[in-house]
Every structure is written in structure tokens, then in C-alpha cells.
Image (tube, rainbow, N blue to C red; front, side, top):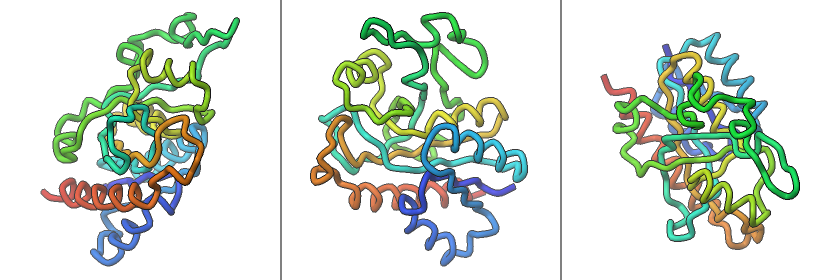
Length: 217
């Protein structure tokens, strides 16, 4: 059973694609490019998991960071995920799907409204700082929504695919790990201030170490 390595785009993990080839790991690591977005990622990960029956699923990608005290280029392991914009906006106030009763806080796969990674052995092998994350369908620029994600949900990282991995992993009982490296602070749209090259370099160094650690017997 291979490791299923998921990424939204090839550009995020391009150095690792070469690493897999040069290290002759192609028979042990199956690469899945999910495309950008929650729906696309959920569908492609579910389909691949059903066909390949992987022993482990790893998702790697860059992310936005809500905490400006954290340096860009930092890699984290996501412990808890949620979908930030699933609910209703009424009178300029956002209410989550849990708060309006559409979802139950502790009904599988949710734990206190989060999709929590229970696979401590995998998390220890990654050996990165743990962070909570939020998955969104709309990149965050609104200050009130950013505050809600940061302070209300306790998120440090923002992506558009992370919850897909956690949801499928929990529902299918497949061990999983999500790695994110920060390339920008959430809300900053001046890409001249982003550190994409640094983030991709650091992400791939981290990812390659994790792959070797997971592949060790």
C-alpha cells in the first residue's frame, strides 16, 4: 500500500517530485494533484483512497498565516481543521453551520467542531510545531472574517484544501498528515511581500524528511 502524497498544484511540490524519482520511491509514493479548492480536493482524495487504499495520506502545500509573530517560511503540522465559511451571513454577522444546528459538534468525523488528526505516531515523525487551520472557499481579505478565523476559530493557517484531507482520512480510517508552510500573512494581497520561493523550498525540505521517516520500517 503506497503513501498517497497530495498537493493542490505541482509547483508546490516540484522539488519533491524530482526527489521521488531520483530516490527510486515511485513504487512507494503515489502523487495526487488535487487542483485548488475544497470540492476538487475532496473528490480526488476520496477517489484515490478508494482505488489505491494507501497506508498513509500526506498533504503538503503553502498557506496563509494569521499570526504575524510567526516567520514566513515556517512549516507546521496541522492538528485540527475546520471549514471556516460554512454557515450563514446575516446582518453582517457570520454564524457557523454548527451554531445554527445544521451540523452536530461531536458527530463523526467532528470533534468539538474540528476535524482533528488522532494519529500521534505520524505527527511525532513529522516533528513540527502543531497548528490549527481553517479551510475556506473564499480567500480572506475582510478584517471581520479574518478576526473570526483567527480569534473565533483559533486558526493559525489558512488553505483551500486542508479540511478535505482530514475529512476523508477520518471517514475512511486512513492515517493522514497535513504539512503547511507559510508564504504570506492572511489579508496581505501585495504579493511583493509574500515569500513563496522560501516557502516552497522549506516545504519540500520538510516533506522529503517526512517521507523518509514514514517509509522507515
